[in-house]
Image (cartoon, rainbow, N blue to C red; front, side):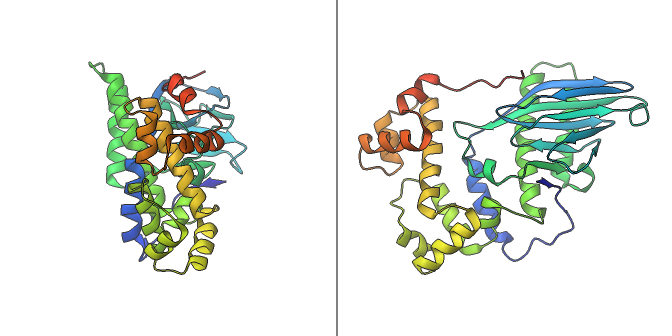
Length: 304
C-alpha cells in the first residue's frame, strides 16, 4: 500500500490525544537511522536497490527522479525536498532521464530499523511506501530536509555525524507529518485517533512495568472490558494484553543490547514476577534467549 499524506485534511477533535500518545512512543522508539549513501548524478542514470532487512529512505536534495516498485501502482516522480520511505525495503528502482535531469540530481539514502524487533508498533503501522512531499510539508520538515542537503554538500568536521543526527530528526518529523495528515490509518495510527484507546496506549508506553490487566486498561479507557477489548483489537489488530507483551519484549531487547542492566533488573522493571518467568516469555515471543540477545549486542547497519 502506498500512502501520500494530504496536508489539507483537518486534524479532528482527537488530535490533542494523538500528540502526547505519539510522543510517548517516539521517546521510546528504539530507532536507529544511518545515512549510508549519497548519489550525485548528471544526465540519464539508473540505480537498482535490492531488498534489505531494514527500512530504507531516499531524500531528494536537488533535481528529480523516478521511482518504480511493486508497492506502487505506477511510476512516481520525486522532486527536490521529497522524502520516500520504504519501511519493509522491497526491491525498487531509481532513475532519471535527460528530460528529468538536464543538470544534476542528488539523493541522500539511508537505512533505519527499530532496534531489536520487527514488531515495533511504528514498523507495523506504517504503509508499505510513504512519501512526504516537501512542498506541502510543515516548515520544520522542510528546514530539516534543506539542512541535510546543505550538509551533504559541505566539507566540514563531523559531517557524517551531523547527517545521521539530521536523518533521525527528519524521520521523526516524517512520522509526525504522516500522523497529522494521513487519510488512511492502520494499527497504531488508527488507535491514536480514538481518545480512549490513545490514553491506554500512552500509559502502556510510559509505564510498561505496571500490572496491566484487561480490567485496569478498560478502567483507564472508561469502557467496559468487552467494549474495550473489541475496540482495541479492531484498531490495533491484536488483543490488548498481546500488545503489552510485545511492547515489553521490544523494550527488553533494547535494554539487553545496551547492557546497562542485569536480566533480573530488566524483568523487574517490566513487571515480571521473576527472572525465570521473564526469560521463558521473552524466548517464546522473540525466538531468542535474553543471553543470546545480550551476546549479539547492537547489530550494525550496512548497505549491501
